[in-house]
Image (cartoon, rainbow, N blue to C red):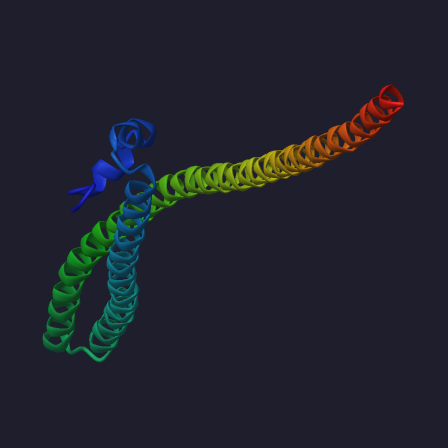
Length: 213
């Protein structure tokens, strides 16, 4: 998958619009950064090559200028020695060099323009990359905060659940204790009733004996 198909796509890209339409904004922004970094490498490699050619052209022009000066001096020397034939040959060599100098100068101007454009393109992509990296940093910070908030909420929820479980257990224990107490009270009452019946039986027996007398 490629986000940009050419250099101008990067320069003219509306980063927010692309991210808004993306199913996975984080994945999309990582892809954009990767493509911009790759584009920068290509632009810088091309620019470096053009700068090297520019330097070679400058050196060549210096060599040609020295050669022109040398043939002009030779022509003057030949004239001083009354060797017009040699002077003409020297001037012909100078003419060839002047023509070559003109070509090299145009080539140098063209290379200078290419380097200028390349540097401008590099600056534009670097600026766009800084913008995307800034958005990615904000995105990561938001994701980090969201994760921290989620973890904090999980702790709160676990604490609430623990407290609820504790209270529920406490209530269950209280109810169990009440059941045990009620069972004991019922049993105690039954024995009390039995003990009370014994007293009544005894009193009844005494009354019978008194009547028999």
